[in-house]
Length: 296
View 1: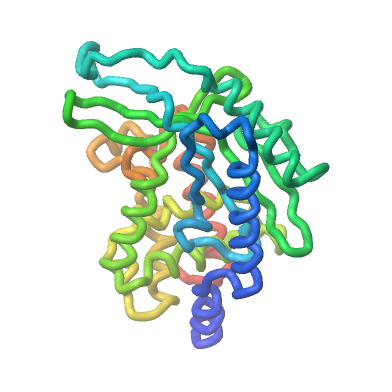
View 2: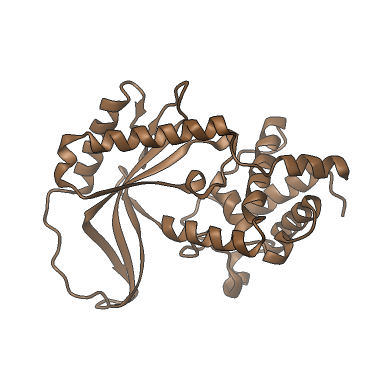
């Protein structure tokens, strides 16, 4: 067990200093690309990091950066029941989803010639160089989900090129992750890194398929604080894998009162819109259990 404890302890750390420097440089260059694009002079933009890089849960094998370029000129919204949102004046300005995407593409290609992949439906992917890491840059807009005129969730709305859209809640993800990290004596984010490195190791060994990094982070977020506060990494990981496997047995319909949520707590982790299922979580936990040599 000492060898396993040493392995897991070694998996708790963030990206190396060199990798962090590359991530920071990538973010800085993307900010410069947006700032230097003349057409954005009359567009109110927020440019910020999100995802595992911003939340300090990334590891070297997943060290790309996610950057949001958020237009605040227009507000999109949904409401829990019709008429809840306060009456306002619709936006009629020039910054449509199509124009924001087009101008951002031009800005990125000017800064990173020949390195921007715009074929994806959601993000522009910037290929890494010797001094940079891969980056996904997502154009988005302000969004609110109204429960009452004074009670709403603030997030972002992404318009995809396939005419669909998605909602993200990066501020809530960051805040909730930090709070859970504080409640668990700084062990939550270390546990996330362990589980991401476990996933990488299993993929390299050919014993399990790739699992999205965000999904892994959400699985760990739903682990009880008491499990994450266990005294050794060996016990913590055993408890984490066991909890995932046992609690995700059966269908989502049997967990109506205890449904797992994304780290942002604004969206359910398992519903028809997600790319993963409860079975995917159980498969990952079982493979991890066997890979690390735990016994029943």
